[in-house]
Amino acid sequence: MACGVLLGFALLSKYTAFILLAFFILSATGKIIFQKEKSAFKTDWKTVTRYIFEIILIFIISLAVFAFFLPAVFVNPNYLFKGISQFLSLKLILSAIGLITISALIITWKRNIIGQIITKIARRKNIILSVTLSLLSFLIIVSVLNVWSGQKIAPVNELRDLAYMNEPKEFNFKPLLDRKEESFFDTVQLFLMEAYPFIFSISPLLLLLSIFITIQAWRKKISPENYSVLFSITIFVIIYFVSTLLAHIVTNARYSIILYPFISIFGAIVIIELFKSFKLDKRKNIPIVSAVILLLGIIQFWQIKPFYFSYTNFLLPQKYTVHDSWGHGSYEAAEYLNALPEAEKLIIWSNSDTVCRFFKGQCLRSRKINLNLVKPDYFVISKRGALKERNHFEFTADSEYEKNSEYYFKNLDNNYIWQILVDNRPENFIKIVKFEN
Image (cartoon, helix red, strand yellow):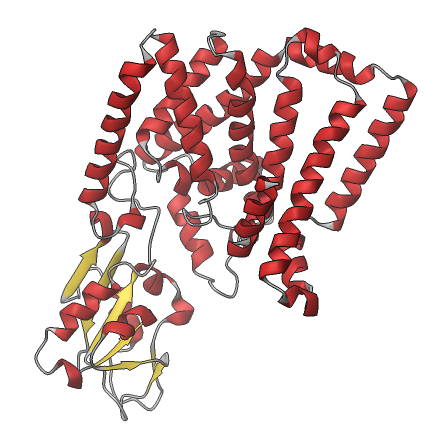
């Protein structure tokens, strides 16, 4: 009941929460797979049906909560169906019905077939968990090696920038996949691009804990009660990035926000396993470890204040970034301009409306600027603004000036009077450029 209500509130916040249903299915699968052999043999169709019914009930309750707090769905059901269609296509629904039908026929043919299958799987549960954890650890290690080698394995920053160049009209993989001969390695590169923002926006401690628990799994040193949770979270993270890859969506830390609570729970479980491995007293050491983790977190956030949502861990070289143009630095840019003499009389052009909200003077909204009618004093340009050529300002044909917009963007690296580097990363900037007569 509570799970359905909370899922309903999550759906009201963002349609992405529909993917939590996949996690519920994985959790149920984990409970069935990671049983003792004696219990596994007793698993029958009633057990499976109970889990299916519980997931369906959660789904129905969540829809009821969604509709109650957004009654507009009764007038226009598309508010609901639009979100569902992103995750539950007709092909997927028909596949699920087909799978259930086949399962029902098998059960009818041989009653204890489920128990026999689950028993065989339960005997190999350690291998299943070890392989699953290895996939996540391998993804982490390859991602770190990729950025440390100058992105020689996969140019993730370049790929992401290519996708952003067409935003908002084509904010997807289209410019990346329009190739005559797409290879498996191309897909691997795109997958690394999908995981890149998540891996480098979580604490390095969590990455180390992932590798540690993988080693422990192969050594068969994990407590049986944690098998199901570790499996569900790990496979969910991997499936999430596979889903965004198939949907041709370029992820960022904001799109991956649903994963952060799961990876935190994952880390907490691994820390408990670490205590057991080194035979440490949990009562004495948990408060100490918690205090140390909290202190490290405070220090990390203090270092990037006031841009707390632009956190990037130290494993990512300074020349790269996982965030850009989230509005960070816009207020500071406006404050700089407001401090100039007669700021109220100044005219600026900015690719971001956020700067205009805080600026005292006049802010040009149109991309096309007729210099015979108005002359901007400054241009405010962010990384994303420089990247998206379609959104560059343009001087109209009748403007009697030799220097066009290309001149300003081409010389942006050095031709500025003020800049701010968010998290001190050169690839996440806002610059103020003075108009030249």
